[in-house]
Length: 101
Image 1 (tube, helix red, strand yellow):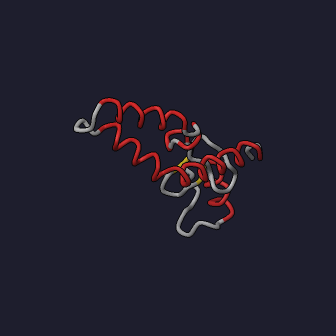
Image 2: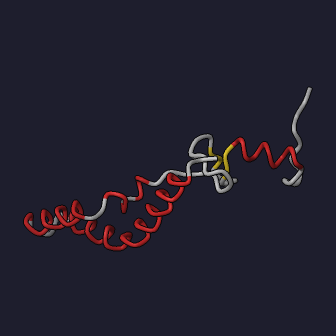
Image 3: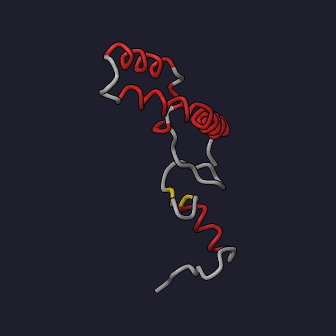
């Protein structure tokens, strides 16, 4: 089980990303627009830099829904390999059988 503080930090980042998504997109569009004057584009870059760091989507990290583990994460299942194996061993995932040979 992951530390509760790390899980809460991740949830805080997700809320910040959602909150600032439109503002970030507008500022990025302004900064990339070559038709605008240099001063206006530069002001947009400065405003973008003043936004909270955790509001950037690149700071998000996928975590297991069950255990909160950040590594060995299956995107399709939204869980880690360890949680997947536990659920499969208990028979809680239909059609999944632990292999043996």
